[in-house]
Amino acid sequence: MDAVPALARWFHFIAGIMWVGLLYYFNFVQMAALKSAAADGSAAAINRHIAPRALAWFRWAAVATWVTGAALLGKNFAAAFTLQPGHLAIGIGAWLGTIMLINVWGLLWPAQKLALGLAEATEAQRNAARRRAFIVSRLNLVLSFPLLFFMGAGAHSAIYF
Amino acid sequence: MKNPLDSLPATVAFGLALTLVLYLVARHATGT
Image 1 (spheres, rainbow over the protein chains, first blue to last red):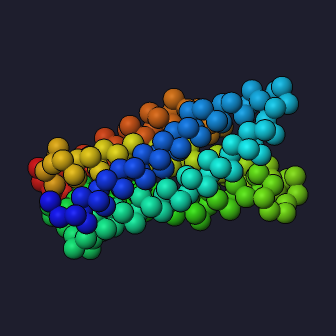
Image 2: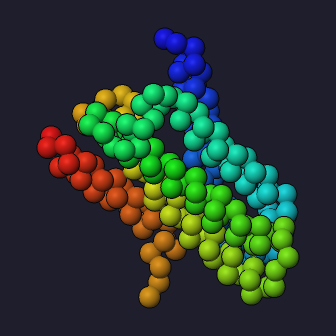
Image 3: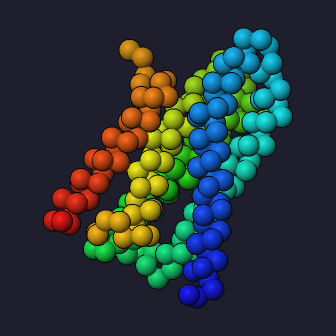
């Protein structure tokens, strides 16, 4: 096994677990916790100390996952993204991952900056941003299921296309 | 109307259903 693909695969797993793991943390844990924390007035601690750190690791893990994935595809990069025969499964996975990365940096992070008070905004803008961030995070949760299926299928030939 | 993404179980079900749909589309596209 060549060193570059082996290392790329290893770091792809590490970064991918961190990215999707934090996505699942936000959707399965933090969102519900924020609701009950808002009820007893302790939401500020989560928003101030946990969410910004989790989001930083989340969005940079997304970049690291994509870059190591691209390195792993290597000379098959174009074949995967153009969904050529034999590369369809990994290609679908790669497209889903790319859409999720764009969602993180293009939609989620700008909304989170407003929602968490890291950028100037009115209360109405913060509330709208909070809702936008929630929906984008939920959409990425939806996309994560086929993403993991096609990534696994592509890498381990569980399905032959 | 309530957004189905507001419900965590509905979101998970949506993700699983999308996986099945994409799988069937890909299988159909390759004729396997």
